[in-house]
Image 1 (spheres, rainbow, N blue to C red):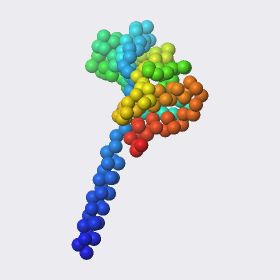
Image 2 (tube, rainbow, N blue to C red):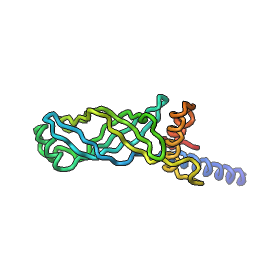
Image 3 (cartoon, rainbow, N blue to C red):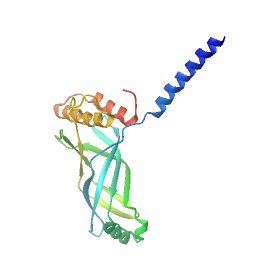
Image 4 (tube, rainbow, N blue to C red):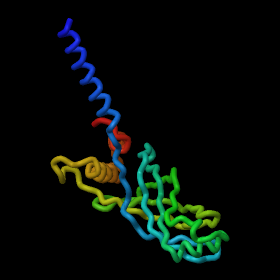
Length: 189
């Protein structure tokens, strides 16, 4: 009877460790390189800020869903505050827009993969910062096979190189899209 209890205890511990490992898996947070983007307010004032795009999902239509983050310097915050009729303290230095869709720039390829977002408008406490043209953002890709054991970030960069090659050659992309989503969501390999 005692040996059954020991076996049961060991099995329970093993099950708990497997469940804990599954719950602790974290997905890859993968963002484009930071780039300067110039928007404008209604009065024509140019707002120069830094933009990044964090990918949250890969879509079957060769687009990416994600969150756009736009960081604006204090001089631009002052202009936004004036346009919105607010105090500068009410204008955040970082503006975030969720559920933004980006697409691959036509004929883009590694090592630098170009994504396009927009045109779009970002609400900054009542003042709109508009980007009438597409914003081009970059991912630094890695050629597959360039590393023996890539970490998840490096594997994601490799997947983008594979994806662009398949787009440019008319190849099937379901596997790459699935793998990008697995990496983002922290799914097992």
